[in-house]
Length: 270
Image (cartoon, rainbow, N blue to C red; front, side, top):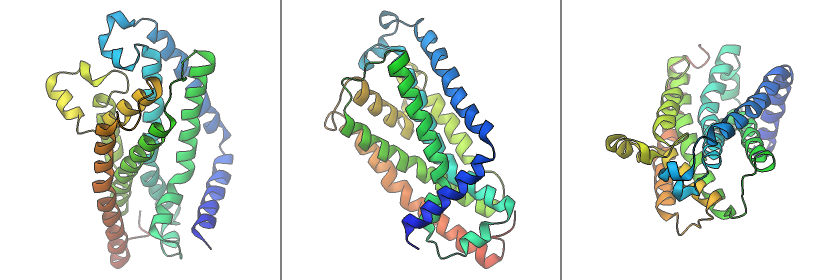
């Protein structure tokens, strides 16, 4: 069975499991429908003249924040999917069987995460559709190439954090604290709801070490101001560095965690 067929099998299985809980899917849609107008009316309180920190992004707070919320939701899902899936497989007793199957570890890592990532991507698209169709965000200047490159690099970086978290779950048989801590820190410093430039100098410096800061800055400039890769080269290079360093380290740690739990006989424990 090829990797594509294996991933298709993962998707089919997760779809069948999700179909038993349609209320959860409806709640995800309702959350977007509820949050989007809340952000819109909040944005009506903030005008460009009163908030010069928004000037680099066109001055529209609603466009600024809905892009932040949409992208943060997607990247947080990318980060949390693998660890949550590993923990679920531990609890229902299928992890050892899957790890012993003729499926490569990279395929397993993607297969564990794929369904949740697709759901989060759907939420992101819904946020943007509501923003454009209902609330009139202007996307006429969007630079598609820049958005695609930044999305790939941002997702790779957050996927690496998720693989670290999955290794933690394998070793300690406990829900990981990594994704929630990193997501909270990213939301605080990365500029989801406000530009990092409003933060005190110390926190602004710390924000530069958070991948989300650079992903959001680049996405907003590419979507709202049409920046190309040349104008975004600093953010792109930083995200490339994050992903180039973190992905190999995460893959090595996850592979080591699998081998360690197999040798110690604790792979099937939970």
